[in-house]
Structure formats: structure tokens, C-alpha cells
Figure (cartoon, rainbow, N blue to C red):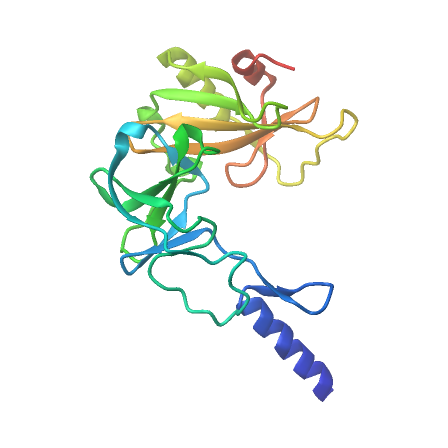
Length: 236
């Protein structure tokens, strides 16, 4: 019984520290959150949004001093100013104009060329869930196919208000079905990323999939979309 309790305690400690033991040699591997620690604050990467336009990028305010991923093996390591999870030393850090709680770094793989981070240490609650998006302010919608052989491929851009409103209504009218299981007869689903641009520096980002029969997405739980969505993405 004592051995069982001790093993459970050790496993809990490993979980809380964000580490795991590899299958070979008992080496500790740390699963880092995408962060940048700058000017005494921790900034986390925004996964449900992207930079809306490069014009929002302000002045350079610093650089990354140390990349912790692949270099830090000690789970007790204390994060220091200038540390970043995945960015190399020397990566330039930029402010977002008129938004002191947001920063950005260049990223060639990101839409519009920058990866955006928000401060966790300020008393500001950023919300990028679909239910929080001001749909009345959406000015443009872009849809990318993300599993294209050429990488992210822009397949649709909606700029007319009628098209934007119709597309948004299809999303609003989608039917929640958390137990939905995609069919596998046609192979892996096709993956899409949808970007919704307002007057804010961050464009909202959501995912959509098509399994050969059904379009679905996850604003919270999985929801089924009408086949009318094909009108806006060309169908398959």
C-alpha cells in the first residue's frame, strides 16, 4: 500500500510540473506552453486568433534572450526575463499599436507573418470564442485549406456584406452534436481554417472539417454545418 501511494504521489508531481518520462532511459521531457517572458510579464500565444494586418505592428521593444525548449531539461527551471518557449535567441519582439497587453514576433508560417501573444499578468480578459466575436463588425472572411500539399491555401475570401452575413448565419445555425463521429470511408477529413476580420488587431480563427459527407466545426462542442456551406468554399 505504501509503495502504491508513493508511486501515485510521484506521478502527480510529474503531472503538475508539466513533465513526462520518456520510454527510454527515464529522461524528463518538458511540455512547454508557447510563451514569451518579457519586461516582467508572461505572454502566451493566441491560438484562436491571428494578426489582422501588419499595419498594427508597432516598434521593436526587445529580443528573445534564450530559447528554453530543447535547452532546458530541469523541471524546476525558473523562467527569466527574455525567455521564450520556442523562439530562438535574437528573435525580435514588437508591440501592437495602442494595445500594450499584446506583443508579436515574426513567423513566416503564420497568417500575415506574425505570431501574437497576450499578457497573462494584466487584469484584462481576452476572449476569442465564437460566442464572444462581434459578428456585426466582421468586415472580411478568409478560408484556407490547411492540408494542401502546398501548405495553407487560400480558397475563399468573402468581402461583400451579403456573403459575410449569409456565411455567419450558417455558423450560427449549425447544430451542436458532441457525439458526432466523422466517416472514414473517404480517408482523413479535409481541414480548413476560417479567419474573421473586424476593426481589431486580432482576427478571430476557427476550424472546420469535411469528412466527405458532412461539414462540421467546433465553436465549443462539435456542431454540424449545412451543406450550403459549399457555396462559399467551392464544394468537394
